[in-house]
Length: 154
Image (cartoon, rainbow, N blue to C red; front, side, top):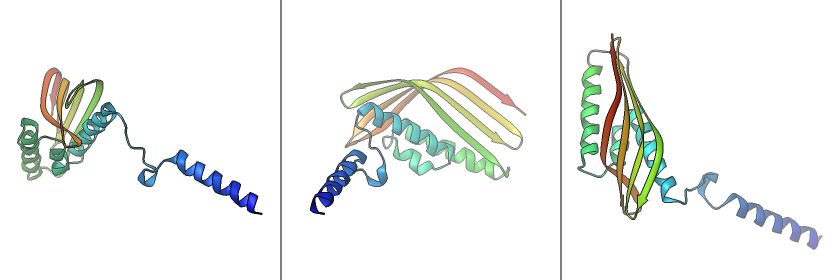
C-alpha cells in the first residue's frame, strides 16, 4: 500500500512539474521576442475593441503613439454622434522582431478598417514599431508607416 501511494505521489509531482507553475496553465513567454509580439498583438486588439486606455497602456506615456490613440478615440466618439454602428478594426501582421538591449524594432504590415454611416475607410501599410523596455514591460514609443494601399468608399 505504501509503495502504491509513493508511486502515485511521484507521478502527481511529475505531472505538476510538466504542466508548469504558471497561473491557470497559461504559458508565460520566456524570450524578449515573444513578450514583444504579445505587446504588439494586444495593442492591436485593444484598439479594435475600442479599449483606448488599455491601448495607451502599451505605449510610453507622452509618446506620439500615446497621443495618436486619443485622436482616434475622439474621432470614433465624434462619429458615434451621427452613426449607430461604427467599427474600427486594427490588425498587425508581424514579419520580424529585432531586439537590442532595452530597445526593439518590429517590422510588419498594419491593416485598418473603419466603417461608419455606410462609408468605409481602409489602410494597408508597411509598419515599423519601436519599443523600449520600461521596468519589466515593453512599450511602444514610435510608429512609422509607409502606406501601401488606401481605399475609401461610400
